Length: 301
Image 1 (cartoon, rainbow, N blue to C red):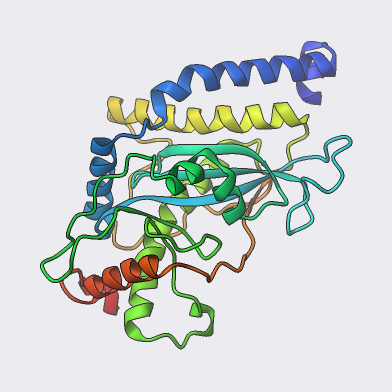
Image 2: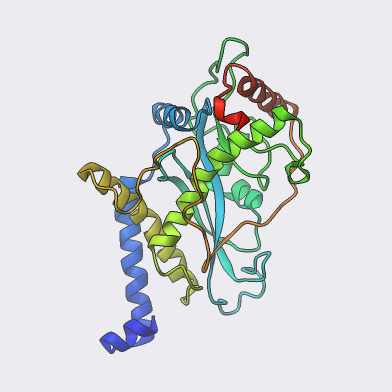
């Protein structure tokens, strides 16, 4: 803000208002064009892309959250302090197989966990109320009954029928082969959302340092960058150029090219090992499929 203030010789509060209003306008215009409107057919198309690229059947998208670090807001106490002691707001997002944001929830306070943000978000509430227009369960092979379409997420989220997370205990390194392969395959899908965050952090240079702005301005900046990320990727794809995000050469082994740092911090570990019997059965069926008809060569490498 201060660099713009000195460059154009206008007051800092005026700069803040201009930046906020500009970002809000970008958000309002582009969100309708570049974010996903849930529909059954749309989810099926996204699931097919995930299956083709990452070999996970019935997977609709990858979900995770990210902290955007900022200066302490006035009169907010510890509301925005996250597990690392930084002040932050939260971006909860789901993405497709090509690193595009589909649905986002922006502005939750940093003290919340992934799971807490998810439960309180519009996406989480619609998911719990079965109002997100997921397709009906379909068979994934000849050996098991139909299973629901699902999101993949890390250990911070609770296991649900349509939210798959890894088995607990992988840090100990002594899991059975079938559970280890399940975790490996699920983690590959989760890298889609991790890389989406990383690409955004690498391309938008406001993120190497904590954002210095007011609460509404910080939220507006994040909103604008999310939709601009999608807009640029969509424009380049239509033009046949890929400078913003070159496509992976090998979908079977994604290197973590884009590391997250500066103003972005990943969510911290949260205990979420309680789940229902139905969710456990779905994960068990998916694990069985990945060890049998869904087995692929690189699982054993």
